[in-house]
Amino acid sequence: IIIKQERVFDYRITSDGTDAGFGQGEDDVKFNKRWTFKLRFPVIMKPGFKLAMGLEYFKEEYHFEGFPENDYPLYQSLNDKPLRSIGSTFYMVKPWLGNRYFMMRVGIKFNGDEGLGNLLESDKLRISLAPLIGWKKNPYTSFAFGFAYSYDFGRQNVYPVISYNHTFNNRFGLETILPLEAKLRYTMTEKNLLFATAELDGATYNIQLDDPSFPEGQDYYLRKSEFRLLVTYEREIHDWLWFSIETGVRSNINFDLDDSAKRNANTVIENDFNSAFLLNASIFMVPPRKFLD
Image (cartoon, rainbow, N blue to C red; front, side, top):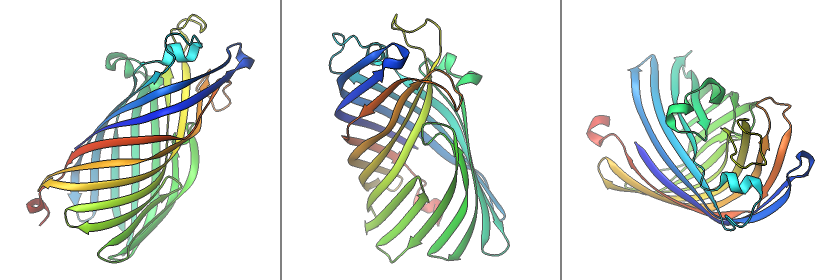
């Protein structure tokens, strides 16, 4: 179980919607606030097959420095508007031919700016899929190859995936899922861990904008992706209870507003952010050690 709050602080946004008649705008985002709740648990744990399930709820909001004086329509509509995601993920691992294994992750999410009662609609559904074939070379090294279909780059994409995990010694380890994440692990003590991470993160939200400049009732699609460099410290509070604090820099890749969900959709407003500082804190619960012995 993970409960996390994150804030991204003080960065500049510039917007260009000239081609769609919305003109240009700029403002400072005072903060971008994000809440995450995750639950993951085993469903089937057999020597020949393992299945785990995860549940997730995510919400984020943007607060603009110039609101309400800055009358650019996107900022007026997006200010303090909750963007929500709710869904589940399934993780499957099947041993295959000696030291080989097959693993797959399937995600089902609903993304939008409405309350939970209206969020579970088919047009807000986002499905991701990542099958991989892996080899466990020895107890310290494993690698896998496959592909992923996801929204990590803001739009639905299919791209190759390479995973490589290696424990160098009792202090250092490397965990990668390229091109999405690379994480260096340093074990200070059994109860203190330090991570350095580079990662890509993205999503697509169905949103309706309530400014009179936008047609009433029309769905737009906010496509966002970002690159993050992070340093994370984790510490055990109790046998089953941990906390972490994380800081780093977030750089924008895209944050665009499209008029449809199609790959060839027209971009209504193009947005750009400068890099920004982020800070998050989380508390999480893990299985007690006696369950693992």
